[in-house]
Length: 133
Image (cartoon, rainbow, N blue to C red; front, side, top):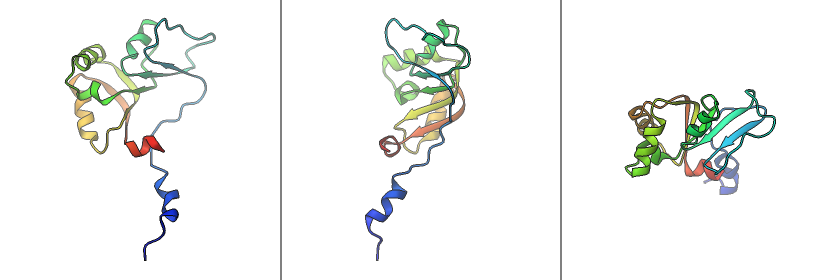
């Protein structure tokens, strides 16, 4: 006899993630216009960038991001903006790269990063299931 679904939910609802733990304050950079560094920002803050906002971070003299969240189209997409962003990010790196909704194809993700020499210390691909939990 199969166990009731309610017995499985606690197990199913806790996906395994290999996400780094950041401590202290963090600066999250996206594509908001007129960005300014927050009052009190210093080198002790973690830096989290979204998509190609790493370029903006460099204009403020900030180091490579501790964590970069990047949509998969930037890595393997064929659109004009995808090629443009790959050119912008060429040769750059992040400590931890996270790509949402990339189920079970980390090899393709790694190959996509190699095409424009984007480096990382750790890589985490998030599936829809992991994002929902």
